[in-house]
Every structure is written in C-alpha cells, then in structure tokens.
Image (tube, rainbow over all chains, first blue to last red; front, side):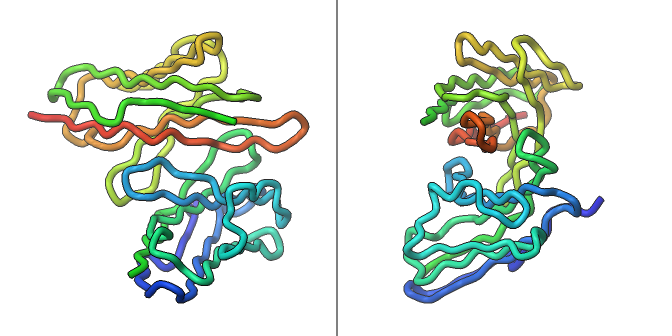
Length: 113
Length: 113
C-alpha cells in the first residue's frame, strides 16, 4: 500500500511569512495527526483528526497555526505568521483508528530565517 | 499529563547487545510503542506492548512493566545500520475520548566498529 505522502519536502521562509504543508494519508485511515519535531527532540503532537473532525488540538498554537482535513482525507497545516522557533520538521501520520498502527510520512523540514 | 524519560545518548559496539530504558508517568495508559528514526527520516514502527512481559521480534525485543511504568528496548547483534534515534512513545487515552501517541525525547544510539 502507498505510504503517507507529504509535501513539500523542504521549505525556507523568512519570519512573518506564511507557509502551508500538505498531507495525504494512507487510504482508508480515519485518524490523521500532525506532529512538530524540533531538532534533538521527540515529536510533539499538534493536532489530531478523526475523519474530518478535530479531536485534540490542545498543543496547537492557535494564534498562528491552523489545520484542516477536508472530506476526511487530505490535510493541510498552515503557519501565519511564522516565527524563528517554528523551525522544525513537521510530520504527518495516519492510522486506521486511534489505538495503534501509526504510519509517518517523510516530513517537511521548515527553516525560518 | 505525561512524562516520558529515556537516556539522551548511548554508544555500543558492533555485534554487542544494548538495552534502552524508558520510564513513564501518564494517565489512561493504553500501550507503549518503540520507534526507530534515522537522521532526516520519519519514525518507523519497531514494537508495541500493552501487556506486561517481553515481545520478541528478530534482533529486537521490548519489555513492559505497567506497575513500574517501565519499558526497555533490547537490540542484539548490533549492526552499524542500527545507529539511529530510538523513540519511546506512550498511547494515552482519556476516558471516553480518543487515544493519542505521546513521544519521549528519544535516545541517540551510536554503534561503533
């Protein structure tokens, strides 16, 4: 089966600019997650979707980050405006349900300068 | 809340055995995962424990003690390609809600000839 697809692979932007990341999960996976991984740290959960509804966004900085999952399939994560501390790898993962089997995409490496 | 602790770095020799420990404190424990992450790549699934005891899968084994909040990943017959970060992650579920996977900071393992 095809894996979790993410794009772009790399992105460099200046602070205060906006950026968007795209994720296409494994077909049929109901649950989709966005994680932020800062260099040298473990992934931190930003937002979790069940189909097209948000079930957990407690760690999402809502003043600048937003995410949506239209039609319960693809998802986009947006940052506006970006800050230097947003430099990280943004990982998308999906699973058949929230109990097991998380599969990660290759991630988008964001550098804010 | 949750707290997951694992050593920051470990080194080992090719052909040897290494044990990576993980301790956790969390509410609503629903299982523990180990992931491997090579530099610049996405985490890949290694093991899942929900009951106490040892799960063996080839050169890798994982152990869980729920009463002690403790797990370890055992890597045997180390190979150079095992040099990577190893992430301990707890599946945490609030009562009546959705599970979410919370990661530790990871252990960077360096395997030397």
